[in-house]
Length: 145
Image (cartoon, rainbow, N blue to C red; front, side, top):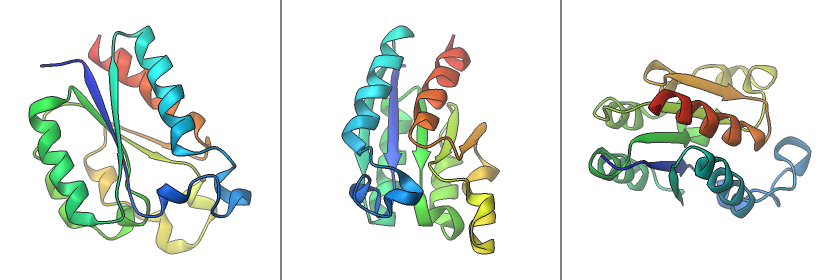
């Protein structure tokens, strides 16, 4: 299996850096990719980053990861709280899965406190801003040895 990590981002994360910067900060997905690529290089890991506003596309990418990735870092955004389909897809993936949330979801609305994805995730990062992705990459490096 490759040493590629798939970073999958859900709905509205294409607006990262523009949407509600008081919650999500001013960094963009390009910043996330640069950071994760640099951290990944320390561990001999490469990164494929994708974002979609469509649940089915994310499910398809998880299926692809089964053949192409050693691990998945996923910020499912709003799908976190609603998508059994994303959970079911993640349950077909045999490598490590790390769930990332930019905001501290437990300090927000009650509906954000439940995560279907956490039922499969090997670790969850929440409230670290985009630094959570870097932490997830470091942990992925440790998990994959």
